Length: 486
Ligand code: BG6
Image (cartoon, rainbow, N blue to C red; front, side, top):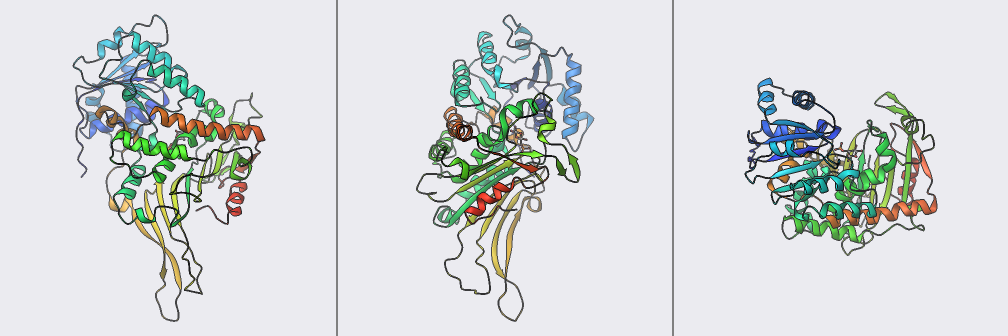
């Protein structure tokens, strides 16, 4: 049984409390932490939104959210948890907004106060300024910012400046929920708690790395946001780059937030920028057409958008060949790809080792070892090796995995990434959150990619919904005599 160490009592205010993130992730995450005894009964969870809603309507909204997210629903548990909930209807950006009703719910004993901005980034700065005017930027306050933090370096700077004028950097928690996923954290354990990997974790033994985050879902009612962002801003700038950083970074001195974040930034700074000369060969952008996902017909991206955008060129897929310019990774490409409406939901990191230098078994191909880390679903790791097929009559080789499956080894319920991240915020542990310079460095590199695409008018490839993505992505690998791991 896992042991959950309770966190100190805290209050949390969720701006955008009736929104999608609050419903799907935040309230269920708090409910599950409560069920495991991590959250004290004196905690306050206050939803804030513009909608005029009574407390009981908000409690009903939260109940439906938790029911949808929980396998074992018990009315008694729910009724106890519901006592923690409060609701305040207000427009936080309005000049004369009355903050007194919200303040009245907050406990005045110096406990951590978490202000979670689950709203559009367009009002991050205005909300922080209002929090400041209301005197709520106290030393015990913690500010949580959801991605996207801006849409480019300039807008990210503006947000960081604006929120930084009200809250100290050490009080700002910039979330990338991929960092709260179990298997993503396991990457750190795998790399740094197993002595056998470090000597081979470099250009000496590794041929290349592939990072895939494929989704079978489409826009999920977020067409407006998504069409302004595209796959690079929505997924690469944050989740894929974070996975790349954890795979490629040097061992940090300690697990302290700044030690870990400093190592990740070094990787971001070492990324080779794309240019108009390289972007054509080293990247693919695509958009899905109609197709079949899980046997169900799916309409094209363009048809999902409202009628006024029949010509949208937004990418729903991107594949990139990335170079890290440092001693460990020189000449080891990192291939990244992500897409919506792909064949299945599958995220993994594949470390492909070099083939044996000499062909000893002349009836066998020199198939290289691969370490495949499955992030979702089927969390676990497989180390693919060549083994002898049993039986007489010569040596026949088979390519089989040493299999470390999480489902087979751990019977625990998998906590959602937000559960861990919320508890880390209360504990004041910043290690899994992005520092200002990290976000900005990632945008600097992404801006360069997007500018190169714009400069060269990079073609938009198409792919059928339910497929593996545009064929151009396979061609890109083929050019390097490599293939994507399927
Ligand atoms: C979000 C993106 O950050 O991550 C979404 O905005 C995407 O477009 C989601 O679907 C994927 O998260 P997960 O945890 O389902 O892999």
